[in-house]
Length: 569
Image 1 (cartoon, rainbow, N blue to C red):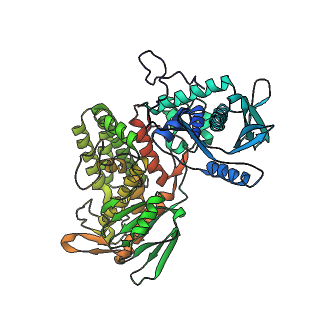
Image 2 (cartoon, one colour):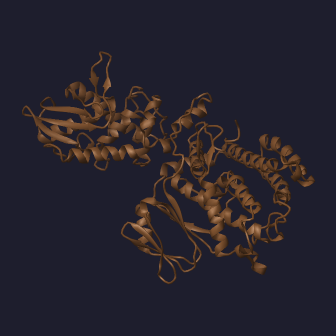
Image 3 (cartoon, one colour):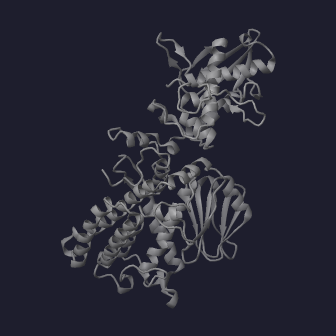
């Protein structure tokens, strides 16, 4: 662990570490925050500065342990705070031992062993126990020598005594000062050098320490700390006149005749998507906001309208995003990698078809030749306008060959004549446009969840109809999440005349039955597992969208990143 006094964070004019502020409006530091800064400075920064806190199974297990202890023995738990110490915290337990006050901190894990083989407290647990002891000494108005501290490790049933003396006071002051410096620093500190600590960290899916280490060292053997899939579902409400309301901690969906269609506990829901003329009560929206469940509205034709996100959050992340976006070289680099990945996906899609000898066509082979010639020009491109031109040229070749991806015996209704939109001029384009809007919504949701500003993109130009950053991100997923599953469903003859209708000048639209089928195809595809070729671990496409946005957020910190690099190994 690095010395807590050594850092590149600002110091005062004398070069000494700046002491904690004594201003009345200076926030008190949580004792658990001191535990965090001793464990990992990145963890402290994410929790205390960027205010990102997640509870995983380990956190809930720790809470359960404390609940069990509260009913077992004469333990007293309470909260104290001190302006002079600059800290506040809730004690696990305080008891009297031999006429002295004793702070007891309970931990689920094991104690560590020192060089002499004796059981000791981990550094982070030690500073936490010392902080509680100092709080208690001030509260009961006694000297620090008159209080004791213990850490009880339940995994190996060891109780470690911690001396509360002048050395403990000095140790506390060092970590408190370090916490103050980090709180006022503008730069997010690097992950801890002790990589094994990341394995038990609830914020690892936000921090992505393994991916950061891999970006700096391609030989790093990555451990997947990012969840492979979500254990919550996206609820789509499609039927005209449906209503979403709240019943306790559940969302209830009823039809136009007020008959119950579905009933979901909020703990099972990740997002709620409302299509067309669907009503939702303010109580249901408030419940979703409290439980950090996004609500999104789409028009009856599938056009994205708006969405909610709980809380303000993301201030530091957005500031970094704004600062990064005034750097033309960074924007060009991100855009170039983005378009390289998109065009390679298009090329691979066409190559999958021509591998079948009987499906080769002159148009397919011509498109493949053209796209192959464009790729090196994209890779060496130095001007954003040229990049748009190369992207458009590749797209024109890809869509020119798109009709040849459909089997020859598929009915004409489900055979596209190319790519048309606004409005779609055939049934296939209606399916594609609808599914692209589902993908766009997922990209918006991921961007909001990460805490970035969706209206500030690096490739697409700002316009009133869509968020540029969401359009940027969705370029990575158009082929694998929409084109491939839609073509597969067409070739499996899953679509009939009941799924789409010709609305004349308004183009083609999907019926309610068609929208349900498109949602089912898209959502099923999102659950499929995919092995990331750079990180080497598998995860679902649904999680991959969020992962790419989090990797993009890392690019804004000025560190090496893996955004849009999934095709480069």
